[in-house]
Length: 109
Image (cartoon, rainbow, N blue to C red; front, top):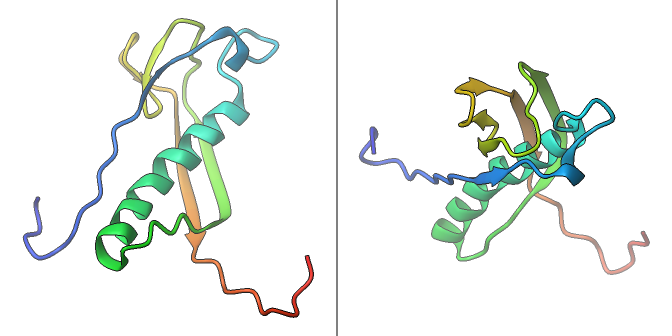
């Protein structure tokens, strides 16, 4: 750890692009990129919450902003959204999250 007194949560996620993850052009669908960014940015937060509070609070997404840099094809191996097969960034994102507020007993959804 670079900062000795700070806790750090680190997750490494790898997957292979499958045919059901593709859009009509045969490249990784933007919604799949959003799902990967969402899950990969949520897990370190959940781990840090678990380590500090004993509860793995996943939080609530407020926004996800994605920049698409390069396509990923079926069979490409991704680490987060880095294309290991072709050594290039596929997408990057900014994910804003917050803790959910507690519902009052009289609240209706």
